[in-house]
Amino acid sequence: MTESVAMEIGKNALTLTLEVALPVLLFSLVAGLIISIMQAVTQVQEFTLTFIPKVLATVLALALFGPWMLNKIIDFTTNLFINLPSYLK
Image (cartoon, rainbow, N blue to C red):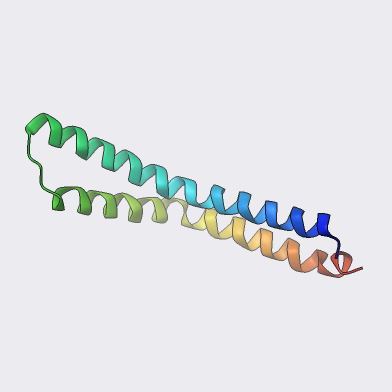
């Protein structure tokens, strides 16, 4: 396995990680932003109010995007295993 092949596999793995994490992070970010705006408007500064909506947004994102995320990871792993003999030459 050459350095360029290893670097390409690593680059693809990092790209996949970002693609898979992005929906969950965006849902959590939007939920946190909305709750922060609501807290600023109502002047209620309670830390526990931000926790539950973020958890619910994360669970919702995982429920909506979970199958897609799993398919992306399975495709990457399958491709890696199929091409493994050619990488080792």
